[in-house]
Image (cartoon, rainbow, N blue to C red):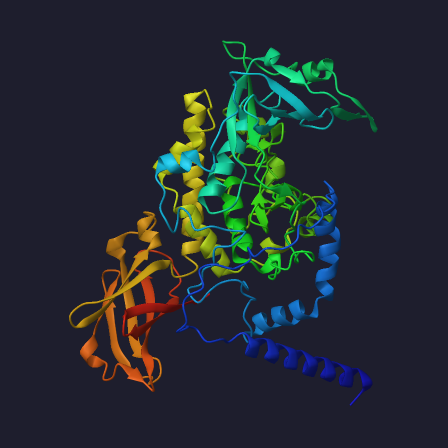
Length: 571
């Protein structure tokens, strides 16, 4: 045997051992007889940490360059990927899901619309509690003169503080409406977001406070009323002479910097799960794809030391969603490729520049029907290929189960819900408002069809005991969302006893309901432990191209009644 052969043999042996270890570690008990964890106690009191230093553009460089260079050096990731290719290892699933395959509520996330359906009026209200008081004076206490989006911070007559932002001069109503709509959707999906609303104010109701400093050409100086007038100079007025703006209310608590899409915060003892392996952050990719939220990154997040003595995690800045890109519009590349994308750069290099990407052939202006909506389309949207403008570790780690979780949040918004939320953007052109609503509905349905055809989309399991039957009911999210026809759907299933491995039933149901004769279960417990039933359900659609994958549901028959204690989804 040559030296080269020996080295290859050793490498293969090391790889096999590592892959086997990974595969072995991936199997865990699929159910629990303990209470289901629905809340993560990451809200215990901690000392207030110092504010993280924030760099506006560093996260783009870090994730685009350094994170990509580090990935080939991550042996764990390499071995797991190799294991997936040869079928002996699974993708690394999110670390913070419970036995029902859900993320618990926490300082990051709350159960809202999908879990506890909200009315269209509640969704339209979102997190908002107050609006800026426009009946009295506003006092500027901080401002930014330079950059693409100059604006200022005000305190109204009631003492409430708001960030005031404006639309770009060429696209009135675009950025402000996108900010409000994006905020309301993320709130309904369960995230912590600031209060945002459209406001109109008279130019001369605003004054500059004492000792307000601004930066100009790298030097600080005191702000003047002339600076304020230069900010609002080209802003359109309505019939009453008022200026339209976005008002984003200061959140309660003390800001302590931003949070990252990777790792944990070293000075927060409550922060125990790597952010790239949190279900609610991985699954956020699907929600971002719906809104074409391409600028989702570290710099557009906020960590706040809450009055309760812990760090609360916010998602903010939705001015780059829908058709908006700050003060301007999205370009066709947004959502279809990273702005610096090695995949397409390599193809272009190999083809000596003859390859032309699809987004390079789009006449952007030809697809802008309404300036107040910008460039936002449904026909070019590909849910499985969508990417943010820059790579994000959490988004790159998204598995099919994470995507299913994100897709069911998106599909929980009905047509009526979407219309109610879009109306809060106060777009004055009814045709533009209708167009935006239509695109959101079409993109929502594309997300549902794509992800629900790659995993068994049944959920919301409930179990009851009648006089003699154990009845498991569930929802078919594909049918609920009008994506698939009930007449073409049936459910093949088996029911077995976990500890005895004998099948009690092997049947088909035309409805999302399974009954098991409890007399088939000979004993109520084994060694003092409740009997656990395993329901293995396949959803088949005769007229749809859908993978026939199982969902396993574990039900414990306890003295207080039957209870769902575990859910497994095949990828």
